[in-house]
Length: 106
Image (cartoon, rainbow, N blue to C red):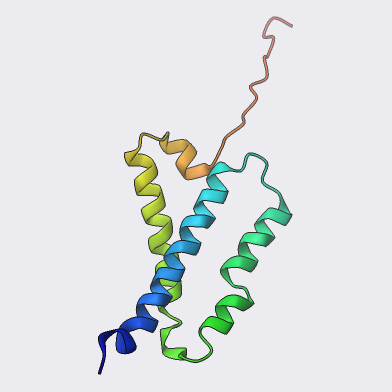
């Protein structure tokens, strides 16, 4: 049997998960104002109908998709850290903390 016919769906499922995981981390890291609507969009992309339709024909390949998601997130974080990104920003996204000045003399 041909290698691509045998292992192609498994490789495709894993690769699809890696790409979606990478894009999810990119969104979470780069978007300054995170909203519930944005979070809902991420969830719908990760667990949406496209994923279900993709794995309809070969049900045994579905378990590679979440593994690919995790790998995509890990690879994105690793690449960002190797390129010199601030570890706190990589872990938590853009942090906008406004420090309030406190007058201790009053």
